[in-house]
Amino acid sequence: MRTAVVTASYAADFERCRLLCDSMDMRLKGDWSHYILVEQRDVARFKALQSARRRIVDEREILPDWLRPFPDPLTLGKRRVWLGPHAVPLRGWHVQQLRRLGMGRLLDEAVIFSADSDVALLREFDPADLWEDGRLRLYRRDDAITASMAEHVRWVKRTDALLGHEDGTGSQPYHDYINTLIGWRTDALAALLDRIEKVSGVNWMRAIARNRAISECTLYGRFVDGLLNAEGHVHCAEALCHVMWLGNGRPDRNDLQSFIRNMEPHQIGIGIQSFIGYDLNDIRQIVLP
Image (cartoon, rainbow, N blue to C red; front, side):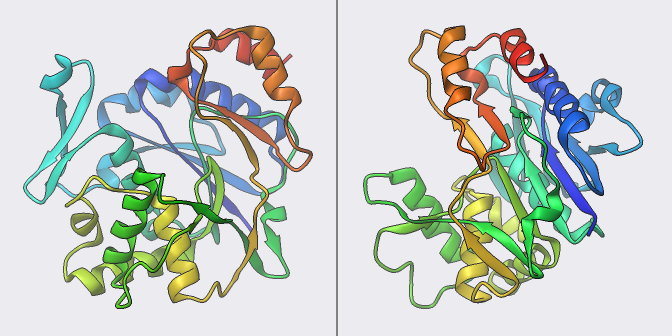
């Protein structure tokens, strides 16, 4: 089946996104197209990455007219904030999630393979391998979210409110569905958006944007497990991406090489958060020697 690889990015991550694209072109096999979702003002810059398999998507094709970006006065205009009459002020990472969710109503491909723009592939992979006997692999770490993980717990509770769980959120711990390389069934994602609209009585984006507690992976995972009984999916605890979520404040090339050597056999890529401070040239030289 044809796969839609979806990446939400922005100007400051352009070179990281270029590295993702270069690594995909070298190592991603099979039948796929790549959609890069960006703010309108960034479209011209990202056009440099466009190809026969890669399209740059203006967020105006996805977001409602009432939600618009502005310079963020709290950062003296260095960052952006999205404002609208039906939303709390949203940061870029909130809106990136809305863009990805919105692709569920725009794509014809059977599966969306979400890849963050700070990911790079180090091993060959065919997205067709996400399927097992007609079921899509759903990344899930069982009982991984505990009471000490306050932000994750907020995401779970907000998700269950959006999905209209009459029984409430239930007892902790909760399953964790979050990673930077994950697959979603497009039909299940469209059904998720329909469910949010049925529960809230308003457009799904308006319902989600009322609160900054947004976790797209949690939304999808808890919808599939809680309301679809995992139909069309098979659970998998093996993350495809080896992620460096936090740094020690002293980025070192030797630490980077050690991190990559610690990839598990089933992992195909790495994700290094940009704020950690590793030199992108060092990452590129390792990823594309």
